[in-house]
Image 1 (spheres, helix red, strand yellow):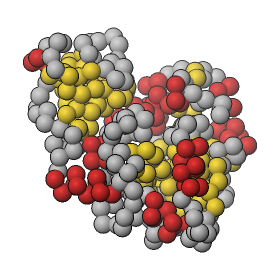
Image 2 (cartoon, one colour; image 1 turned 90 degrees about the vertical axis):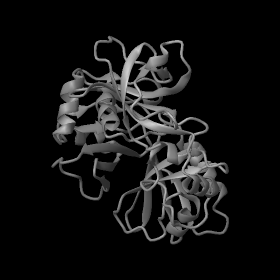
Image 3 (spheres, helix red, strand yellow; image 1 turned 45 degrees about the horizontal axis):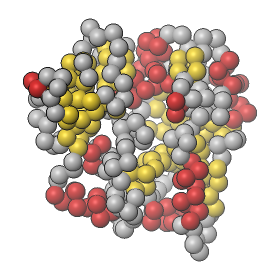
Length: 321
């Protein structure tokens, strides 16, 4: 859905999966610094919003999700995954329960498939699943923000900030008093700095949770059965996921960032060496310079010097080998 905030001064539309909101408003680094300082907001109104109501909503979701939510307290944020039967990540949900309704925002373009799956799993449970994307917009306030939250708006609060489930019709009015807007590029730069994976960016058709460090944060290891749990348990016990997420410091002398999918090789092997991974997200950070997240093979030494395409890269460990 195209955001009305694209009419704000300096707004440049995002492309690809984030189409519909602003990539930036004319000054990428200023917008990053504002978010890092706890000011401003990010328009995430292109994300899907799904709700689940009914007296059995938490127990039912507990059977489907990787997270322990059967006793989720009201207003406590969590995140969860839905896996395939083989343990591959299919959906990522960012959840909060307000005491009557579970609210979740999800990646653009995924809500229809998610709702179809949830509807297929209702059986005799007293739950109702609804697509609220048309009337609810997600707005992100950074950590430390003192911006006012309108009365009655559901809030999902995490260490990284607050996600507001705001009535879409109030989006423009809220933007006028929420501080300077920041675009998706600023938001993504801080996400990469925080080493947080994103579905569709750090994942492909065969990604499992252990590769991205989603164990604990989105996957609970002590809960009951769910689809794909066998893979999670096996990898947890053997300790050998095929790949691992790394954080890359890229050579700042390069003009262009390596695009998502750029092949990574060991620097000692040169540009014709064996592929050992690929870039998932690359950004320009206001303090760190060009940085990226990438997936590499598990057995790549943690101190190995890497090269992403033609760009030299030093790695920091996100997921231990």
